[in-house]
View 1 (cartoon, helix red, strand yellow):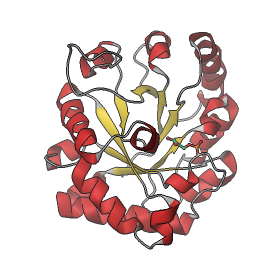
View 2 (cartoon, protein in one colour):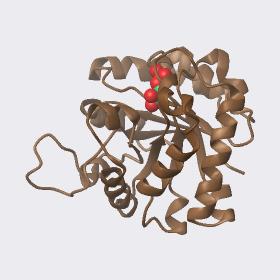
View 3 (cartoon, protein in one colour):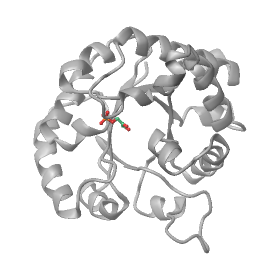
Length: 254
Ligand code: 13P
């Protein structure tokens, strides 16, 4: 009942020219794929070109990697929800651990972004996840709960239908060390339980929860076959059109 959602987070990679050739290649691999929602989140500079190439495609949706919570004004270097909507961006990644760690984003700031994204017609892909230190201390569930409660404060049950959660354990990002399917499932079930407390059980049952952290063609199918894993947020492997298409295919009928 939850349609799988496989998203590419290109991070600070890919020029406009590289985006054009990637898309041509990637599309040829996923032509026959149905029943999976694909999202590509390029850097801001490639969004306009990608939007033009996709032309409102139902199969491949456009995402952004971040945004600011004001619509316009004196915020040097920032991009607004209105600017993203003008280019038909559908999803926005919020609270990625790199934003939290490198740029000091807090749950309170991420919450402001979530609360502005939703009425603007942007679906947040809200990232949560513990560090290795937090996991070793047995605190991962508390950390997830704090991040979810803080980032989703004030989100109504109706709005939750448009939110995607990405569980990305920080220790698994770009390290080649993915969470085991059991570890990931355990965390996802916990995320869903917290969402049920924040809203209600039937709303929580509909929210899609992606796993992110060293997802590759070789480990995608087992991760995606876990009952509460509804997709993947892919960094490194999404830069390779063939590898990303294989991850998308691993999501078909899982
Ligand atoms: P990797 O797939 O490179 O580990 O990155 C995961 C990630 O951070 C996606 O947002």
